[in-house]
Structure formats: structure tokens, C-alpha cells
Length: 310
View 1 (cartoon, one colour):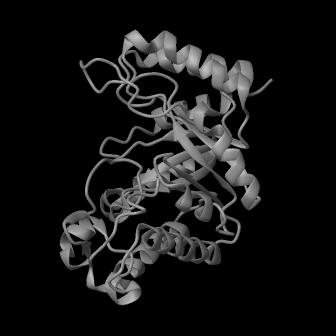
View 2: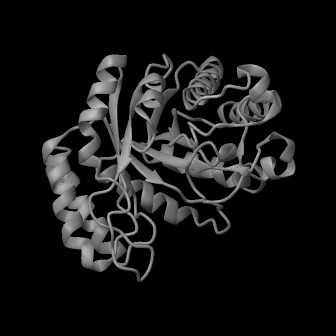
């Protein structure tokens, strides 16, 4: 399965013919799936636009996976912004971490279920991607956490609680639509205590990690290895997925690439694609903040054609 990450946040300018052109190119490039972000902003302002986006993707022969984004600060996805709901409910924030929701408070859990119920019941979705669980080992001093675990809190307790939360939400989603394909990928900076347990959630089908293929920079600073190489976490991916009986996943972060790293990106991507073959490979479609977007896109396109569909 080849998945195009397409995080077109906001939908403030909607040009359907451009969607059709992009989705058609994805199909012609060999993509099976387009993964679309959906945040609180889309829930408030872009319901019709999101429905149209799904319609056009389906017409072009793509499955549609949704990425529930920035939910309570507990997942990634587009955009990089705090949770509006959590800002309006500061009593549910982890003390001293106002951008992170406490997983032990039932109103937040109920809000997550309601958010997902709207997505699943109102839209023709084929799958869900839990994108980079965040703050999995953050010790919370919220009263609800202390009530559940007592005063002698450990990072392992917090990770167990996150696994419980993620499993509860996954079970809820599958009950609403048993045909959903469910994927979870983590950052390799998350402890293996968490990732090895989360991978065993029965409702998940694909698990793995994201990572890049070269050095990156945000603007004019010197490029640096700001994130681990995706190839370096392949052994961990295989080990955890084998232990849990899951299919493997990898997301190529072909973003934030300055022109000086284009050749290194090409070399790194070719090394990855020629070495491994995840059961589900995801790659950003025109990833954000590249200095030469067309060149990076063409490198990606040519190497996918060379290695993925041969």
C-alpha cells in the first residue's frame, strides 16, 4: 500500500479542478491512498470542503485515510497549533503544560469520541492514521491522574495510560465502522516501553515510524540532522511488528529540505527504497517548506517508480 500524505489544512481557498489534478497524479504515480488531515478548524469551518475533497479523491480511484490532527496536543498532523477545545477547558490541561490534555479526565475522552464519531459517521473514510502520539511519558499532577494512579507516579504509568486511551479510542472507531483500516506510527524518540505496547493494540493493522532521508533546515540556518533517518528505525519497526503480528509502516518526511541537501535526499531515499519495503509506505505529496519543491517532488516520483512498483 502506497499512501500520499496530503495535509491541506484549512481549505480557505477551494479549487476543485486542482484537487482533481493532484489526486489524478497521485493515482498515476501509483498511490493507493491519500491521507488527509482533519483538525478542529476543519470541524468548525471546512465540513463541506472536506466532503468535496473526499469525493474527488474517490473519483480518482484513491482510498481516503484521515489523520485526526493536534487533538488535545496528544497527536501530530497539520497544523502546528494548540487545541482550541483544550484552551477553552483549562481545567483539563496537564498542570504546567497548557497545550497537553490530561488523559485521565473523562470529559476530554468523551470529546475525542464525539470528534471521531462525527468524522466516521459523516464521511466516506477507508482508514484512520494515529499520527505520532505525543507526550506519552509526561507525568501529570492533575487530580484525575492522582486519583487513578496515586501519588507515586512513574513514566511507565503514563505510557500505560496512553496505551489504554489509544485502545479505547480505536475500539470506539472500529465499532462505528468495522471496515476501517487503522494505522499508528510513532516518533522513534518515544520509549520502546510505549511503542512495543501500543503496537499490540488489536484494532491496529499497520505500525511503524516516520523519519527523514537527509539533513533539514527551517529557513537559512545551517542544515542539521534534526530528526533520525527513517532507515535507522527499520529494525525496530520489524521487531515490534513481528512481536505484535502487525504489518509494517514507514513515513518518509521529505520536507524542510534546503537546495544544498537535494542530492543527499536523493541518495538517502534511494538507499531506503532499495533496502526495505514496508507493507504501507507513506510519503508527503509536495511536502512543505522545501527550497526546490518541484525538484524534490520529481526525485521522489522517479525513485518511487523505480523501486516501489517494479
